[in-house]
Image (cartoon, rainbow, N blue to C red; front, top):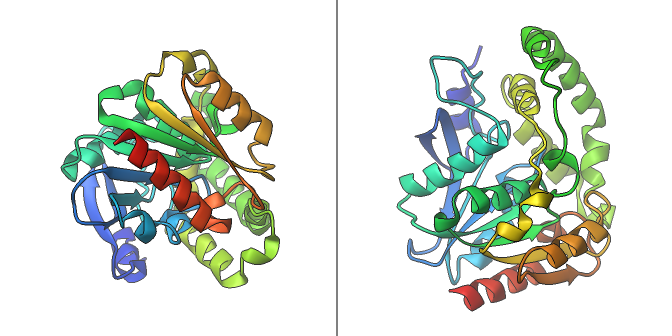
Length: 295
């Protein structure tokens, strides 16, 4: 069977880079001149670094931009956690990975731009490591629903861990059958997602023993109570929503902008959950303006 490292090498792009960090072999890309301001891009669930392909280089015209595949996605490795490795999939461990990756790349402070569950992690990182986060851009961020509020019951977790091989196979069947429809639901104008790009996203997710990695991520899901912690945040923030977002309802993003102290709000027309995909020019423009204001 082909090793994951071989898969990484085979599927990597010409601008792909890899480094070992917190138990994972992380796939990342870096654009810009290596000087500040620094921007770190955090993609959403079921997607990958590919979700930033339209905006990485434009954003790098005035910043150094880093995007990476989060654990359980893309070409970042998917080790099963054990006493023999550091790999952990909890939201807290993922936020620590962001900071550890910054350390490895020599980045002291960065603006974190997170989409969907990537926005959940951007906010969580700002709360847990405020000295390392210059600002946050939360695009369709899951704060009051979904990943941020879901929880695997503690009494069920030992049994679920014991039955991981079986449950991960069941999850694989479910995700495989629903994947295309769910991903198309992230777009307002479905025709903007062509079949070739959809197939590429599918391939990014379904690498190696991908369902086991996703299962480990699922097992570590728990309620983050971010709604109670928002007012403690002093980091400057921009909330972005597509006017037709049905995945994270627009009302949730409007609430987030109201409850985050001093937050700015940008509603991007004619798009849904992924403004960086459907309206990349507008997305880049509002992120660049925010970075200029806080730099």
